[in-house]
Amino acid sequence: MKHHLPLQQEGGDVSALPSKRTAAGFPATDGGETRESLGYRISRRTFDLFFGSLILLLVAPVAPFLALMIRLDSPGPVLYRQTRVGYRGRCFVFYKFRSMYSGADRRLEELAVLNEQAGPIFKMRDDPRITLVGRVLRRSSLDEIPQILNVLKGDMSIVGPRPALPAEVARYEAWQRQRLEAKPGLTCLWQISGRSHIAFDEWMRLDLEYLRTRSLWTDLVILAKTVPAVMARRGAY
Image (cartoon, rainbow, N blue to C red):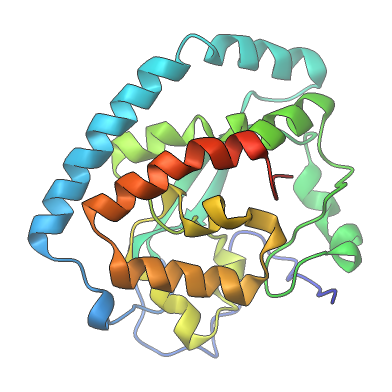
């Protein structure tokens, strides 16, 4: 089933949503059974800083090479910055290695009819906006490396629901907004379960399942399973 996306990429019509909102303009969530304990938050931040620093040390040698390949492949900046929605609706600046041609966002309207995913997100296997180097980066998930900076800054965690665009969150149903009760992460149950091969509603249910069962042990298991999932490249495009 193909769905049109809203044209606005950095916001969206939230007038139909409940009146209780965050400073960013999105509905605040009430937590409920998914609320984190103080001890878990402290332990999780320690977990994020440790593994974030470790991953940064491991990828630092390859980052300059990737940056050079991006610059040689097509005109434009090496880093792509975008507004994403984080914990309880708070927006932050999200970093990726650029994998599309400059100005790609402006072509979204003409490609919307080719959307291969249901719900408010856009997924297209052979997206013509992706550069040659960008396809390699996406298939290997190397385009996500700069998000380590988001983890170290505290905007994201190592494990958690993937951060959504404001326009997508504006179209969430009430039950889907519960996924905002955790910091967004580099990897998650969706990431290790098939990524783009998973329907949108099932993706949301996986995120809520994570929120109900999360623990440091769960985070370690998901992190360990991320490596083979990335190498298999299933659903990565």
